[in-house]
Image 1 (cartoon, rainbow, N blue to C red):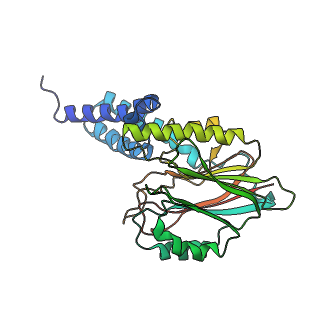
Image 2 (spheres, rainbow, N blue to C red; image 1 turned 120 degrees about the vertical axis):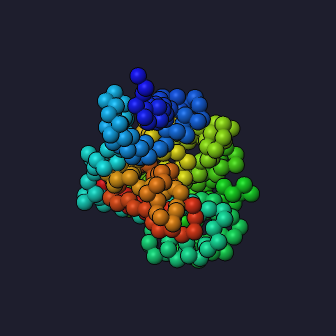
Image 3 (cartoon, rainbow, N blue to C red; image 1 turned 90 degrees about the vertical axis):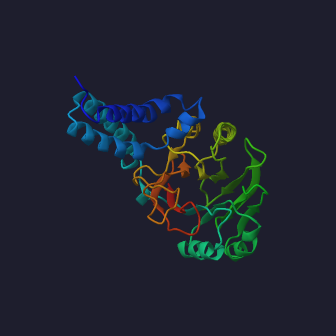
Length: 319
């Protein structure tokens, strides 16, 4: 009997999706392509829904069940983003801090627009990555508004700037896992007699090939150890981490370092790539991670400001 028309491509599509969505995360710790594929959970969920409908129309019950199973798995992986964190209690917070973070892109032609937008947000802390010499002048307009600031430029485009209006006892550069990727460490006391807030601002290597992926993974491990070694709390890690919460390497920063994703409870908020049609086809790779004693009061993604990323504004608090 001749196979029903279209059977082969539906079978192939469901099989390929199962490999990418279900199998790749299992091997992401060892193979860079598998890790890369593990980041597209929202896209797999949408494709799986479309394939389920296609399998139903093609009258392929087994394939329908397989496609539907992928839908269920991917939806379960997405659900924590909409589930409020159990211990959130922002109303009782006595210390609140508003943080702006943005990968400005080394080719951004309009730093003045970025500076104007940041000023309008009135953040307590601003973290900018991929800053170059072209940003030195525009940043002076911001530095006058912040008592504490540190700008570190690098020829490979991994420059970083941190500006803070919080009373701080220390702000310095560390090279955690990579001598070309500076991390800024800030120790601040937002409210008198509170425990100091420790903030790590960083930019991990983009995993575009096996070598760079291995570099990012070394940075991730070293960063998790660095955060864990600091006994002070609360702790915050902020920056372009070049991975999503669905990568097995993201678990190194959450499970190993005792941090959690501030995006939880605020829905899916993609930040890259920034496209004319919006960020909804993208993925969230710009993160703010917090220790369990920190409450995330608000988190939102900002507008297109000439970068391939979108800025993120997060308000946190603690008692």
